[in-house]
Image 1 (cartoon, rainbow, N blue to C red):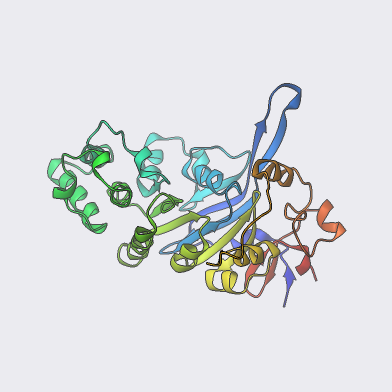
Image 2 (cartoon, rainbow, N blue to C red):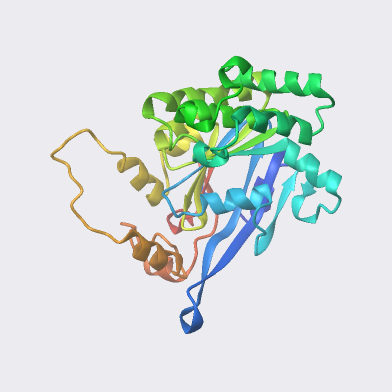
Length: 333
């Protein structure tokens, strides 16, 4: 039975580890008289539960990274709130509280070669992280570093005294994950962590996330445009398009039986190995993104095969269909 959600906040359950509530982020683009407001994140609500891998997926420019920066405290939202263990991170005043948050919520970025200074030995980063977050003494610092490396399949002898250029992208990304694990975090925010890694190594990284969830009770917010790895690694998934989460629920249900027209298009767009099926249309992504972001109604209306007049004027509300949220007027009744 389809029903309109009269109170979307009821979907944010109390046991969520980190909760985003009605996030909005506005950027001013252009200069002078050509300035305009771009609503990069609009009314985004979701949570990551304990011992869960939750994925935010969507094409480049949909707002995924902006959401992750807000959750990490790197960006302040224009509106909305972020709660970690029921504390609003935007209201943390004491340095001890902020440091505890940084200790428990660690980030992993897209390009591991940008994480480390090429002129600095990699192991120095690991020891500094242990020291800065109070692992209490050199022996305990060393043990924390060794345990973190072991959890990603590496040993100190493979890392010590070496520079970033001496590692492959896959090895360096594992070291980046190890650095994040030194503080024994409860949540990893991983923004496109396998996009810069060779295809042969991608599965080893996503398998590592599953091991961290199962063996160390680490939750993961996995941000990606890759639906294949998202399907493989996730418990739940939220599909983003131009600043909105348009569909969210169990990963099996969302990706195998998508309800939103955009999710359906994403699934159908996974390329087949057929040279006869070539993409011939030329599209300026920048122009298309800007046009869709500026729409006052449904951002997908210009590409949707089921578009109605209502879609062009009004942003769809959140509806709940077969156990997942769908932001589409098709499910109003």
